[in-house]
Image (tube, rainbow, N blue to C red; front, side, top):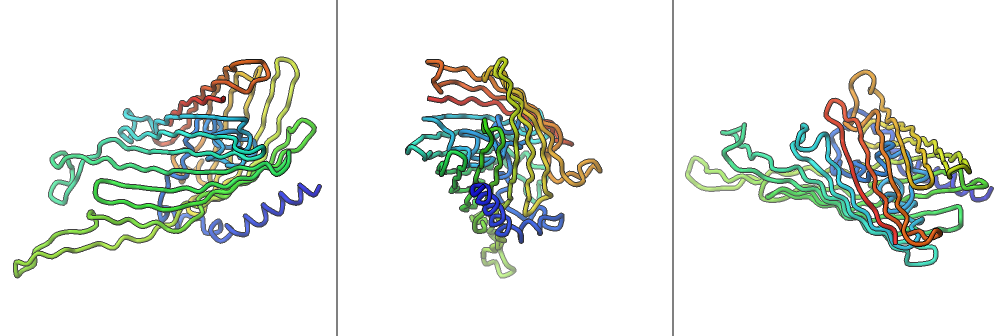
Length: 356
């Protein structure tokens, strides 16, 4: 009972810290934040059911949804995922993709350290000018977004697990760039005779504002006297897309063929976007095959005015191939997910992870 009170206390504190931002998460503030890529889940194992696994996410992929799940890395886990956004090269984004790579290592009996890098690219984009707004004659440029995350997770007891992530965010073109720092924090609580009931809460992307700078913000001009001078545009500061994730899950366990059915629900309070409500399920057979699906709901979704592209139905699957002895945790996992992205084409993710 004391542990439950502790969890509720954490929920109250984190909610109070973010209440001002959460209350401001309305249409008037949409588009005013920076580093929106921090809201894109790059792991196929999560996106297959809409990132609803805030309470029960485990391993390396937890470093996005709820970093507290990193505490369940047994020894070493290495993972990679490639995401083709909105149809990839055949879609509206002309080759936008995300590559994510991470490593989790148990360094203490109850402590796990992790690092993951998310790199987002957009392909080649035509340079446009005031005298050639259609581009095509001025070459191309390739924007790049990257964030580097370093995390530490700790198991305080067998039922309470917490973690914190420090991240560096960079966005750049050939002549303009911005960088910033952010923090994630999460906690998970596990209870029940077979650990079937789980709670999770995560505060994400809290940190100081970012600001663009570079030669791209200046313009060389000549005045009427024939003198050269430089006009520089002042870039406005932009806040990180802070959000609060709260999740709940329950496992229905069946002895025959080691079957498991997990039902999960999550709520995301966004400071600069509409809030999300997500429900989903995952079915596991023989601890080797998993099927999952979810549904992401936003205010205005059914009226035709969603706030973000990735909404509605999502689905995915995983195959776990164990190595070594029967009681060994070593293995290879291959994950795939699909997310609908109305009105654009869907997002596909495929990844693999190794456990040593």
